Length: 435
Image (cartoon, rainbow, N blue to C red):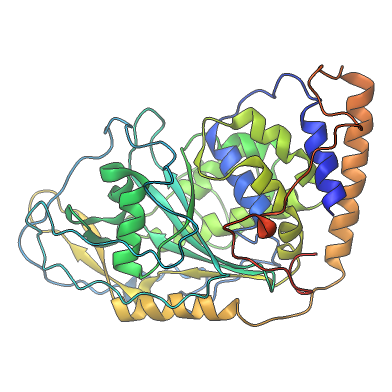
């Protein structure tokens, strides 16, 4: 497998000019696909305990009376001064014992601030990442309406993804009670990390943030997808009936973005469904061999603290997680939240979290990746497809593209260190995990 990665990296330097930049979202999905944080190769859309599967019954919501005022801020046009990669001084990714302090509020909160959720007990070898999707193009931050926590166990090649509603009303340390979706716009990735630590007992060590608008390019690049629509959408997106629907990029983007009132849960379920289909396409037929080219093409648009060598090193894990039933999907859903109608002229709605119910979902998501299970023969098939794709790509580049003077040659091998052998990465290879 390391020879495959070496060859793929080498081909990257023979491409010359990068591909036309489709910008942020494509790279975001590819990064997450390469690292398999979504585990989108499962058969069908698997929703674990903690949320109903594709159920739009809004009668489960509980309306709760709350104090008469709420602090509301317009974050749609905040200048994007926070979108930068954090430095080592800001956050030490290798320090598993680090836990942030929680400053008092700077603004009087509309509701009493709840106590911080107890820190979740996570073994050192478990990776914790967060995927973010903002609703505004740069140079503005906007709100992060897509928030997904990811737990990964490299030893057993298993992962869990937990989708969190952006309208969850939480304490943002040092600021006030506010929607979770505003934390990044207020103080960047460090504020978001601290907010997640306070309200979920989890401190992600890595992040990926994407802007909207380019998801449709990705779907078009893979020649569209066929989506099984469980609940029709008659009054948006040109009308989408139930059934198996071919979707191009424009229709898929509308399907993933549409929200009926406060039904954020159904939207998150549709997003998980689409990501599974896209990931299945990217992990099959050797498509991960294109990762270096795409990274070079879209670098600078996506916000992340991952490097290309790290992503390449995660390809073996990606192929294993593409094996059926390696990844569980969870939601902070109707059983973990209550709907709050804000009094006053705005009539805004937010979700109030049930801390104990949320803690149970997180603990369940974590426990599922601690149970080993054997791989099927699909991994060998995907590995063979990747080898064939790499070999075909290498031949194509040699025939059509001149090699720049500074490209690696056989006498100058490019060494690739897998992330589990890189200092500071705690994952340990086993026979059930990495090769």
